[in-house]
Length: 95
Length: 336
Image 1: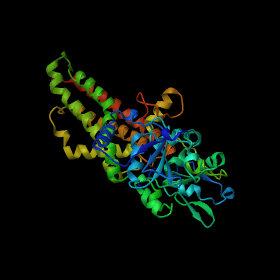
Image 2: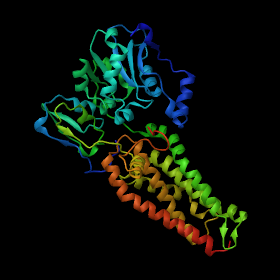
Image 3: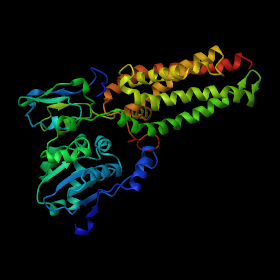
Image 4: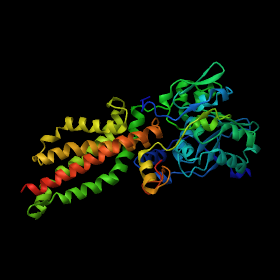
């Protein structure tokens, strides 16, 4: 996969809370997380795109990430309207 | 829920489907490309057959039914307002609540004798598998990212290997996005072309149609090159363009195109100010268009996009404003 910017992701893992359910490793689409023994570890942090699937599926909130719409136009529209970044642009939905 | 409300579906991909796909790739009717949510039966499924969950964007449903050719399956289509799985999951419409509600509304439990749901992996952005289990007693299994890997996933005993678990963004994937990028950017580029073409008619002698025709083409061409760089060259050459920021890649794509086409020697760009404006505006506009490609890529993070915009937008705006002033100055200082 093409690499994006380093040292920007808000992904955090609290290893003490991990119960080793492996669900986050199933939903991560970029191989950021891997089981090391019985617990999960972040093995490729800068590949994280902050989609939030790992945190959504973590049963113990061991993983946290500020997920959202990673789209420049959505951020511009959100800034102009004074709202959160939104996909409701160009008179309709983008994706 | 009665038997009659389960709709049959097949794996056939007809010329009509093909035409619909081609149309939405060009952005035609993309927001109305939906099927009715509900439970669908593929190849007379039995109570033991697997249940596959997808979005009610027709292309999403098509991907699943095509992948499962010759297999008995239940397809549970969620109401995502005609949006694909990943985007809908990001918005939460492909989410825990909708899944739980759709399961109960369709009477799925009366049709199947097991308690397993197979979800597309990317649906995990909106669905909390644990919460679904707590609320319905159903077990969520995350299948592969791409529906085309479903047969291999099933044959491996519901196991997805690393490759199936990764999104990819190869040349073919990016090429599919080019048409809709051209169309979307065109909605801003074409009016801008028209305005510049009109302004090109201005000179010291006032407005003249002859001046507009002789001078306007270069301005239209400049925006055309930026359009091409930002929507075709940028996406296709993505991994090979220098820089990590998409805005940087867009500017680079523009420079590559200018070099390739040697546009600086084209007629109509004889003035020094025009030439400077051209070199400023083409990379700036291409950079802006490519920055917006972040909405289509499967690897850019919101935090990264925010940082990239903070760095790039001021440069893009400055270059465009200076270019416009130079270009207008050329109209005034020179009698053509």
